[in-house]
Length: 149
Length: 149
Length: 83
Length: 83
Image (cartoon, rainbow over the protein chains, first blue to last red):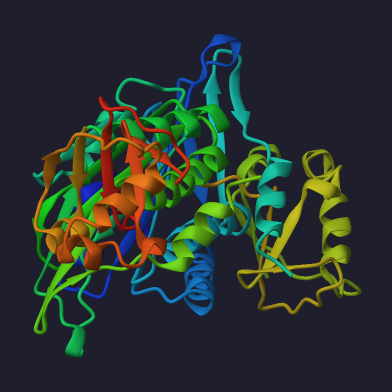
């Protein structure tokens, strides 16, 4: 399931819902991305998340479908927020449920790696020096490449 | 942090506590193991989890320490339950928080893989044919071996 | 043709969305980007380094040689940074 | 010496914990397992296949050649299946 929203989410409730009533599930893997502020001259007062409505949902659905094609998943969930977020706030939740631990863990890792390179979201940071657009990190492309070929 | 307990736990509250007040955290990875029942002739009515008090806590602390030695983790948590558990109930929670997504994901995967082979817990299943001790799976040893040498 | 701009491309061009008629002779994405650059200093500046410009047509990532039609929805943006 | 049994080893032997005096001549874990097997049919049956028997001494996994002292806490159990 895909959700793109301004509002926060409740991880415990989301994971409970993912497994509810399905006793074939042996494990749930999840990843939550948070707004971080490392302090110092790069202090981040807030993050602003912009996205491309329509294409975002389409890409997230494709990524989720690909995960289900690769691993035996019972259920999966991607929630991604947009708008203004402060340090410590949740940005994204990716969760996967499977009868098998390995499948849940690998698929969760895959989902967040692909989301980072394929979902049309952009972050700008509010810093003491003004607004700063976050740049794409080469590690993110490398992380995705690991799942290819 | 390590907890070995009979009681259930609240995933959302545990993850919130893990990150509370630390704005250097960029991501939290977690894995929850559930009692599964695949139905059919192997129907599992309940699971009974036995452990070796003292050695359990010692081994879990060693595993946690090893994860912190390998990855830059801000915080980590292992909760493992014992006693009688029914299908759908939570058995174990492993969670890792780090400034870096990759570190959190890899360390979480590592912790559950090592816990499976090193922590002195034993499961027996209550089935229509009586009590059945769960056998060690070769995949679990293979999963651990991946993190070695 | 609808053209959408996101992130710092939107900020530098000073426009989130515009309707343009595809000029005669512009057949693909590469041609469109060249034409956009010629529309004024803000466009020229925003599109100066095309190595950091991505394009989606009808919500699919495409390369510079992707053909264009007048009904297309074209989005121009920097590499994504979500997650 | 305190000996603890877990899981199906505990169930088959019918004992969770016992105090024994290490007999003269038993110097390591392998020797202790052989001696335990000789203590009666339940022990012999439980310890028949030693490939599925693990041993911890003072809460550390050890091999069959690990030396034993009379103050040791020895635990005998099948491969672990938690998580």
